[in-house]
Length: 274
Ligand SMILES: [Zn+2]
Image 1 (cartoon, protein in one colour):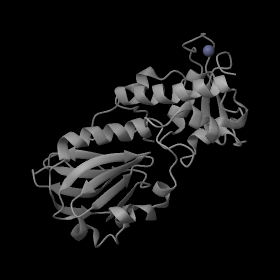
Image 2: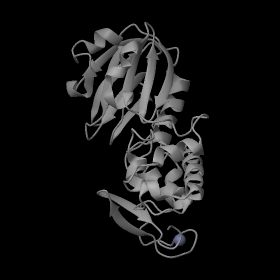
Image 3: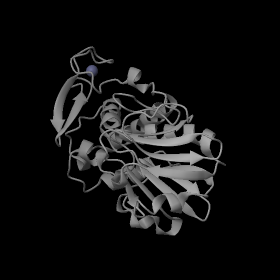
Image 4: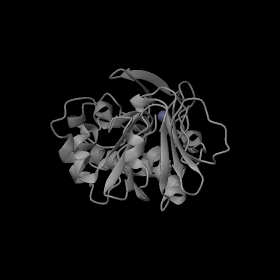
């Protein structure tokens, strides 16, 4: 599932291609992907708008359009949004096509069909509850270790479950949570409010460095993820523990183990994390 570094990479790759282009038309093949407005009104509502810029908030991609409209895209499990030449054959599971005035298309593909697309005036974005309830951006300059410490206080749940909670912190999913906790040397089952000040500091630094590393390597492709130009990421080759059950820990050589935490597979090293 695309997490913060993957959505950030999609944003950056699309930025180069689609900013300044005008949407000439849209075709919706699977109406349920469009959450707002009603799917039959969607092509008319987006046609004629110029793409002014792209932003990311957590795992949401925000496409800013003229008329103070924003298209909000969430890729969920298997969504892909790619800038494609019109003569490229349609990939399976292509559900929405945007025609751009440079002759290219922006195609939304989603095998599992959990992705969502909204189009609404900027001032109404708060109607999207997942977006409204997002916690702070972990890479924002104003997000500090002190703030993380305050946020963790009183959270009795396991630290990994807290990291995955989008209302706590925006953008972290299962892959980066495991990598962050390994780098911080903290076991995922630890109660979040029991971390020492030193551990909070290490967790903060790991959150920032691992997410930034993920962006620098253009995201992680474990299954489906590709960026806005259809390229796979590169961070999967640098994962320390995620999906590496039985392989030697990069620090101590002991085998990486897999356990369930809050129902999710979690990869860790019992030697290096406590
Ligand atoms: Zn180890």
